[in-house]
Length: 504
Image (cartoon, rainbow, N blue to C red):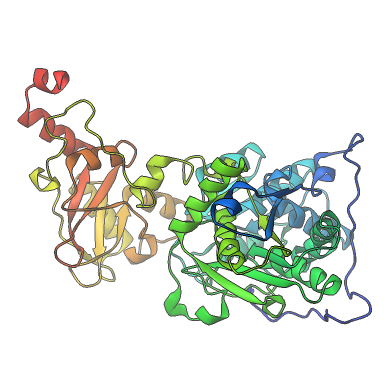
C-alpha cells in the first residue's frame, strides 16, 4: 500500500498581497437569536473574553483577550474544520449517503467529525494514539464512532501509527474516505473565512498580536493569513511544545520526544502549516503549560484544556515587553471535559511531578514515612528490546504469572514496559504481529518513583496506578524494580498487627 504523506508539499497559490483568494469562501450562516436547523449551524461565533486577574498578577500592561473555542458545540476549535471538510467533500461528490468517514486524529477533529457524521448520517471511524484522554474516547463512543487506538510511541510514518492505520482501513472499507486534516485545504480555510473574521470584528480592527498553538497548523495558518491581509503589521506567535519539531529551530528528529499536552505539536510538518505566516515561535513545557491551564480555570473561570495553558504561557512571555496600548488575542482550543482525569486531577498532576505531592500522615500510620527499600518487590531482569518477540513475551508473562515485562537497550536503564493488556490489545487489533519484536508493543509512558521515596507517597500513587517503576536516584536513575498495590498491602499486614493497622 502506498503511504500518503501528511507532509507533502502544498499546492496552495495564496499570496499575501494577491487581489483575490484562490479558494472557495464559506461565510458563517446562522443567527444565534433564532432557531437553528441543526447543531452544526451553531459552530463558530465563539466569545472573545478579556483576561483580567492573570495579566494583573504578572504585571502585564497590554490587553489580553481569549478566543474561547472550547465553547463550540463539540467542545473545540476543530468543530470548524470538521464541518468545513465535510461540506467541501459533499460539494465535490466525495461524500455520499452511506459513506464512512475515517480520520487519524488526536481526538478533537474526530469529535467534530463524529458529531457532523451523526447529524449527516455517515458512519465514522476514528484512529487515535493511546496518549489521548479517556474522556475523548467516551465522547466519540457516545457520538456513535468506532475507535482504533495506536501506540503513542509509533513515529508518524510507521505502519503502526494512526496515519498508516487509517490509510489501511480506507483501502479495506468500501465507500470510505479520509478527509485528512493534515493536507486538506478546508482546515486552514475554515479559519481564514470565519475564525479570523470573527476575531477582527470582535476587536473592531484593533489587534496587534495573535497567539495560538500549532498542531496541524490549520488554525494559526488560516487565522494568520487573513489577519495579515487585514493588518500587515500584526505579529503571529506560534506555540510548540518541547518534544515537537514544528518550530523551525527544532527541526531535528533528535528533538522528538513525549509530552503530555494534547492537540499541539507533531513529529512531522503537516502540509497545511504555513510557517511563512508565523513571526515568532515559543517553545513550552508540560509543567508550565498544564499549571497555566489550571490557572485559567481557577483565576479567570475559563474551563479550558491543557493546550490553552501553553498558549497563555507563550502570551505571558511575549506580553511582558509589550506596552499598554497594544492588544493580544490568544486561542483557547478545547475545554475541561477532555481532561477531567488528567491535568484537572491533582492526583494525576502529582504523580507526574507537575504538582508538589500532598503526603500528610493524617491518620498517623506507622509505615507512612518508611522508605521503599523496606519493601520486598519484583526486581525483574531487563529484556533486550530486539531479542524477544511478542509471542515469546506472552509466554513469559504467562509463565511468570506477571502482568509486566521491562525492556532495556543497555541492561541498566529502562526503555519501556510491556503490559499484558496492551500486548493483547495490539495483537487482537492487528497493530502488531506475534512475530514482531516487543519494541513495537512497548509503552514508554509510565509512573516512575525514586528509590528514596516514602511508602506514604507510593501508597498515594498506587491508589489509581496499577504499578510504579522504581529507579535508583543515586545511580543515574538505573532500573531497580516494580512495585504494585500488593507489595504495599503485604508489607503492612506482615509487619503490623491487624488491630494496630486499623487503629493507627
